[in-house]
Length: 252
Image (cartoon, rainbow, N blue to C red):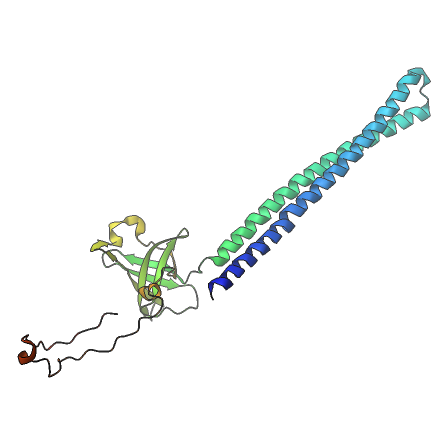
């Protein structure tokens, strides 16, 4: 996959994410605002009718109020009360809907995070700090072959790496040896830091760190073997240097 295709794929993912955000967040927000606007308009209309009716009643005075007028005034007050109640219910529904959308978005994000996280291959069953050896209880059908590099994960954080040694046929568990970092002749052993020591229950996942072959851009191509003995032409009489009979091992 070249850079142009990767760019197109990233742009497509951004476009889909933007559309998803617009459909799930922006559009429902507009709908709630429009519903609140309609409810406020109805309440305002009820209030205007009530004020107009009360003004008419004040012009006639209390003595001029007939049963029909009292009934109409009571109906107007009931309408105003129902309008206010409808507005309160609309506001409450809007708050509940917003909280529900926020919870659904958080759940979707958590599901997406869990889906992209590496699945555990096993769990740490035991650890010997003296020998830097741990036992792994498999929890998936993926076989762990000798030499396979795995990582120990705790609370979503990788704390160390290990190399699979073999499978114990009796217990069904794998034994593995912890990898020791050797950078610039400064050796950092896992046994020197208790926070980086595997503990029972830690997850075993495929190592997310690239190997030396990955850093070189692929598997190393073995070089042609060098002759164990120098050619006959390179003698003491030709170069004046001693001929050393040794096997030279090419560097990868």
